[in-house]
Length: 83
Image 1 (tube, rainbow, N blue to C red):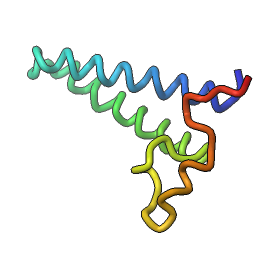
Image 2 (cartoon, rainbow, N blue to C red; image 1 turned 45 degrees about the horizontal axis):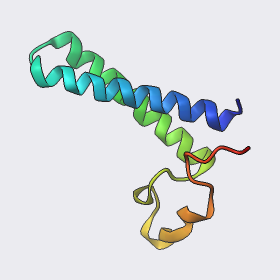
Image 3 (cartoon, rainbow, N blue to C red; image 1 turned 90 degrees about the vertical axis):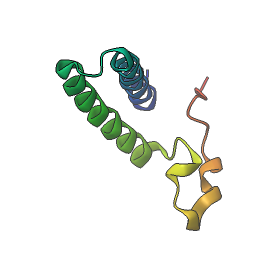
């Protein structure tokens, strides 16, 4: 597995944990431990996303500045894996 795939896997794992934590917090909104975990995993997710974008390009069109809006289609899609 190359660096791009490893970084994408880490980002997907962090995003899954973030989403799962949100679901838990929907029913346990006062759980301070879960709130602290949410803050921590959100920072991890944001950091990984920024690293991925800086190394491999945008994940979404919203990751591109408007002056260069359509350049995001020049790279392979994030889910495309080199065969």
